[in-house]
Length: 474
Image 1: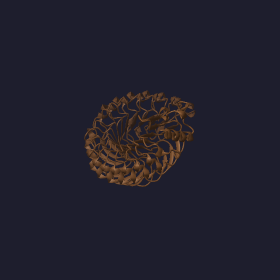
Image 2 (image 1 turned 90 degrees about the horizontal axis):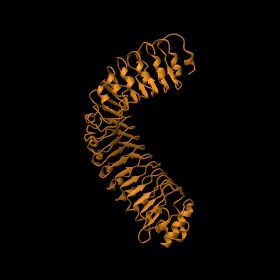
Image 3 (image 1 turned 120 degrees about the vertical axis):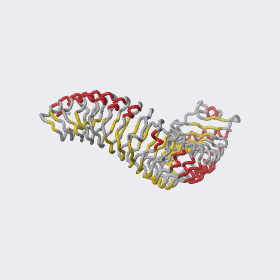
Image 4 (image 1 turned 135 degrees about the vertical axis):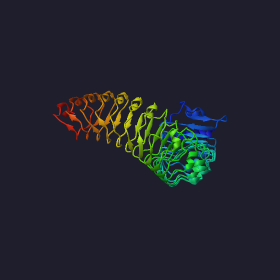
């Protein structure tokens, strides 16, 4: 124990930023030092110095002199340099957290000697090189965080040997190659994060074996092919993020058969075909993003009532049909975007009964009829985009009640009559586009009160008269 005392004191004085407690710590047991704890025999078993402004390298730490150390947490400090291979001498280590520092270089393969390790956390450093295949030796490992580094190379297939792993996070690196099918062996896995890498190829059908998976993040890679239908077997899946890839084919048909899915995003891919029928009754959905694909189907039939839905984006697909009044029965709906499709019919006045709505985008469709007066009840609305349709009639005076509105685009329609002065009440408005319509009469001078306005477009109308000096001062 005296040897441990000298060695640990030497290490931390080298770091030069650690505060000993009490003042005469060099003369008493280290077990009373801040961040140090010992077992009954007085051997150091835990070092926890989180966010203590430590600076320096680990090379002064004589790992072999701490044979009883089970817990080492030096996260959120200013440690730098490489991780010494001697770390493999900590044979009883169960918990290792060096995250949120400035470590560089490679992960030493000697990590594979820490056979008792359960938690391994190196996220948010500057590590490079490949993930050592020896990590697959850590049979007791339950949590592996390597996110936000600069790791390269493939995901080692040996990770499929981690039979007790629950959380595997490798996102925000530069990993390449295919996702190894051996990942499908990890039956205990609840969270898998591979986002924001350079992975290619298909999603292995073996993912259907991950029966305990709750969170699956694959976004921001170069993955392709269709999503295996076996993904529908994941009955515990709450969050599935597949966006920003090159996926094709149909969406999995049974993606929400257990009705626990909350967040589903497949935007910015090349998916085709209809929305899976299982999503119509997926009442657990909170966020669903389908924009920028080639999906099709009747929008009035493919979606149901979602009591806790907050966001739905169907923009830039090939949906058709009419906007259903049932959207008003989604009381938490805050964002509804259906821009750039083939939607016909009129806007149902019931849309005014969606109290939480703050973004509504129906632009670039084939909508007809008038803008409902009931929109005046959407007092939380910040973005209203209806441009590029065939809407007619005047602008409802009630739009002047939308005092939170910042963005209003009604351009490229067949709107007529005069521009209502009530729009001058929209004092937070920074974008107003009424261009390419059939508005007549004069431009209301009250629009000069919109002091936050940075863009105003009234072009291609039938306006007459002089432009008010108030407008010129904008």
